[in-house]
Amino acid sequence: MTPRILYIVSRFTDYQQDLIYSGLTKIMGKKNVIDYPWNPKFHLPYKRYPKNLGYSSFSLPKPRPFFRAEDFDIVVLASAKKDALVTFAELLPAIKNKPIFFLDGGDLPKVGGDFYRLDAGRLFEEVIKKRPFDFIFKREYVSSLHESNPKIIAFPFSFPYHVCLDTKQEADKKYDVSFWGQQAPEIRTRALKLLEGKYDCSKNGTSLNQDFKTYKRKGKFYLKEIADCKIVLNFRGGGWDTMRYWETPAMGSFMISQKPQIHIPHNFEEGRHVIWCCDTLGDLTEKIDYYLQRPSEREMMAARSKAHLNKYHLNTNRAKSMLRIAQSIL
Image 1 (cartoon, one colour):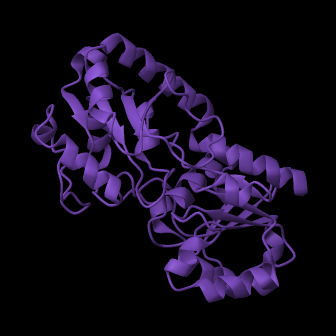
Image 2 (spheres, rainbow, N blue to C red; image 1 turned 60 degrees about the vertical axis):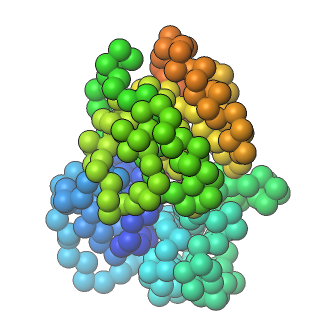
């Protein structure tokens, strides 16, 4: 029997929450995954990528005169945002006897760490004292912190199954080297300064002082532009796990990346799917120079990484792994 999931959400942007919602609904259907409160971005096509990651198909809100815990088999606190925690705390007396999962897509390695950053740490402590989670699906899974607790599952970002684009062949790619992103944290600033005046970076917009409001590449156009890059660079953001880490192979482009210092099951392999650069960036330009001159190697690794992502790292893969755990405890 297909379980019914109460999916307690934040109204704010949360990539992990949105990716897993669309993955679950693809597998189970919307009638079995109920977002609470109703999140319009999941049902109405009015946002562009990446703020539409939770959207799967058009639907209107259904009237819910009252909340009945018996209507659900599993409860998921789907975000480490304060508003989702407040909703969860209000519902806790009614749902405390259900299996409860926490989808922690926050930037910080501590479980629920983003709640403390968002001034909700005390409420989080009160909640887990009343009812500890049965399982925690952790994006920033640091082995030294979490491997001793079998209830904490490494659960990185993924790529949405429903974003299907035709990617260009190597000969058509118009950019040499790109890194389009905000410059925090410090490694990104260092990288952008190092790339200043090199390759075609200045011409293609790989420069300092970028932010979401001034990005020229937005929505699916951004993904098409990623597909047009010979080399895409990736460096950590607020957390080690970035969407670019998954977007680049999905779009069929070759990636040089800082190696994520978190556990990623079925991660990309050095020299087969991706090339790592050191954290000091001392070898970055050397590796860029090497691979700019070797299109066949780039193309082969990009094709392998795309196939690897399609096999292991779509959001439907993540949703299936969550469902396997849910089925095991029901």
